[in-house]
Structures are given as structure tokens and as C-alpha cells.
Length: 556
Image (tube, rainbow, N blue to C red; front, side, top):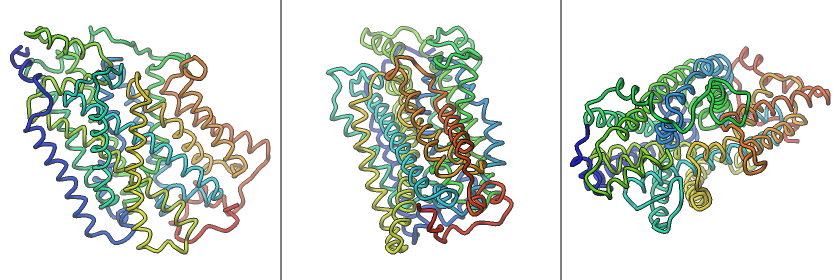
């Protein structure tokens, strides 16, 4: 059990000097890596895809770190308070994802020598489809990064004891907006600084460091609770089995208004992963940084194994927190009691950061805060680099080829990355003032997951549907997006909730069905040249040379 005196001492304040030292050393290390890598950089090929020769294991870890973010790092332990071990059912879809990514996506994409994933869509359809997909991905990434910065900043504010009663939850007059603004600025801008300097190579190697910081922060939390309470996993599961969760998870329910069932969680995560690995520039750009399909498969395998392990560890953090908050003795003072009650009954995403602030000792607290920084920075650096890639390759290089010299492109890429950082911070500040009163995971899915399903659907139409042409794909992309927006905001628009786990699957299906039906109704068919860019001809043939411009007819 935790001694009352120990709890009281830990709860006296936010970050101590030792915490600031740990965080400062971590940030200095990240910046130093960016500067070191920048000194060896010569072209946009290095900046965007790392010369296509990065180690597969490092790319795999970077892939996981990039897609993890503070949304999952804080959200999963908090979700344990909502649904218990039922939330682990998201792992059930991973074996099926492996089959799709391993046998369908990677053999195809690694034959194309792409820098931007959307270059392919111009070859298969036309430039309009490529540009639309690029814009959709930009909107997805901006929303994703803004939520990540907001999540991390709210957690930092909680841990620093800034008298918050927000994030997410009710806003009070006690909260100081200036403090939150300062945290958002520091988290967002620092992340972009080393990305601007070092490009994808800096992103991947800093992601590797950040991944181990993430693991360390979670394991330190578990170890601290185990040592302070003389308990183990068996004790935590026993308490969790009797805990009164806010939601029970059913195995199956045809009602799409039911937020979480085993089926909807597993299906939702399956489609999220296959769309992310098959249409999202952040994931695909990592695969483009290795030399061939064999290396890309190793990268994915490393990512999948590490993802499963980290998911179990974060679930363990949630179990440990449930046990700790339920079983520690009443504290000595009434003021501390109010803090404990605030933890127990506030929104679930505040639980982990408040625990860090109140109970973890100095130094260890700094280690976990560094992990939160790592989760945010690994997402922001990846997103900013991918945004810069899309704007440079899909728009600047494509529309102004006469100005696209290697030196000009590298300057533009770095300038764009820096500008993206400023824009992300501005969007986050706006989101902070507009979005309150919902939990992190629902917030992120409402904000950007409505773009992911249609993007995934367009790539499936391009690879496997001979009747898919610009005349059918453009309406299909728009139909999928309309469905995604309506499903994401169904409560606000129609007064009826729709399971957030089914937004991506639903919009993916609508996109493919719309494109297929229009193809048969309009009796369209891809030209012989366009059909050569479908899955079977690409995988069966040799590597494609994407450096040559697309035929002029494809622009129309």
C-alpha cells in the first residue's frame, strides 16, 4: 500500500528541478540529432526518403512511433477506465491487417519508386484525382497533428499543476489561457525545428529514441505502482474485474449507435490500419525510405510486433492505475482528498497526467513527461515532413517543373516544414478554444478520420477495378467524404450517434461501392495505358520509373 506521507509529498507541486533537467536533456538530444543529420543532407531525395537506404528495423519503429502519438499514449490507459480490458479487442484485427499489408500493399507500392503516394493516382487516373487525394491527406494530417499537440499540451498543463479543470471537461475561470498558449507553442514549434533541419532521416532516428522513451515512461509507471502497493498483475486484474466501468463492451450489436463492441472495435482498427498503410503518406513515406519490398516487409513486421507489445504495456498502465486509485488509503488532508476525488471522477483522459503530477517522484515524473513529449513530437515531425513532401512533390514539382531544381526543392521543403509548424500551432490554438467537453479518442476521430476511409477506397479502386476512371472515382471520393463527415458528426447533425469505430469502414465501403456502381452504370473502362498501373501488371512487372512525366492527357 502507498503510505499517506509518500502520497502527500509527491502531490505538493508540479515539475521539480530534476524533472526539468530530464526533459531538457531529452530535448537537447533530439535537437542535436537533427543538426548532425542536416550537415550530411544534400537533396530532397535525402530530405523526403532518406536516400532509400535506411535500416528496416529503424523504419519499423519509426512507423509505430509516428502513428502512436499522445492520443493513444494517454487515451488507452484512460479508455481502460471506460471499458476495461474490452478495449484490447482492437488487437484482434492485427493478423488480418498483416495479410493485407504483407501480400497486397507492400509488393505493389515498392515497385513504383514513389516519393509521394499520390504520384501513383495521376498515372492511374489523372492529375485532378492526384491533387484531390493530396488535399484530403493534407486536411487529415493538419487535424491529426493539431489534436496531438493539444493532447500533449493539456497533459503538460495538468502535470505542471497549472490549476486546470479542463482537458477535456469543463472550463473554469481558474484556468490561465496564457499558460496553455505557451505550452502549445513550445510543444509544436520545437518538434518542427529538428524536422526542418534533418528531414525524414532525422525523423526516423529521433522516432527510434522517442519509442524507447515511450516504453520507459510506461514501464516506470507500472514499476512505481507495483513497488508502492506491493501488488502485481494478478492483483490488478482481480480489482479491474470488479471495477464499475462507465461502459460495458458487448461482443456484437447491429446498432451502429453503440460506440464500442468487440466487433466494431476490431473491424474499425482493421480498416484504420489497412487505410493508413495503403493511403496515408505518413506510413507509406517510411516504406519508401527502405530499398525494396523485402526490407519494407521487415519494417512492417517490426512495427506490428512493437505495436502489440506497447498496446499490452499501456493496458497494463491502465490496470495499474485502476488498482492504485481504488486501493490506496485516504490521504491526510482534505485538500488532497479533493485531488483524489478529481482523479477518480474526471474525464478518463485526465487520469494518467494527474497521476503523474500528484504521485510520481521528481525525476521519474520528468521521465514520463519526456515520454509525453516523445509521443507528440514523433507525430508532429512525421506529419510536418509528410505535408512538406505532398506540397513539394504533388504541387510545386508537378505544376512548376522548370523551377524544381534540387537546390530549390530542398530550400522549399525546409521552408514548408517550418511554415507547417507555425500553421499547426495556429490550428491547435483555435482547436483549444473551440473543442471542449469530449474525450481525446472521440475528438481525434471526429476531426480527421472522415478523410482516411475515402483515401483508402480510392487506392483500392485504382488497383483492382478496371472500370474505375476519373469520371467514377471523383464522385466516389466525394461520396465517401460526405458519408464520413455525416457519420463523424451524426449527433450534431441528426441528433443520433454513430459508432466512431465504424467511420473509417463505412466511408471506405461507400467510396468503393459508389465507384463500382458508377463504373457499371456509365460503362466506363480504363485505357490500356491506365490498366498497366493496376495491381497485377505492377506486381508482375519490373520497377516503374516515376521520374518521367505523366502523359499530357492524364492532366485533363
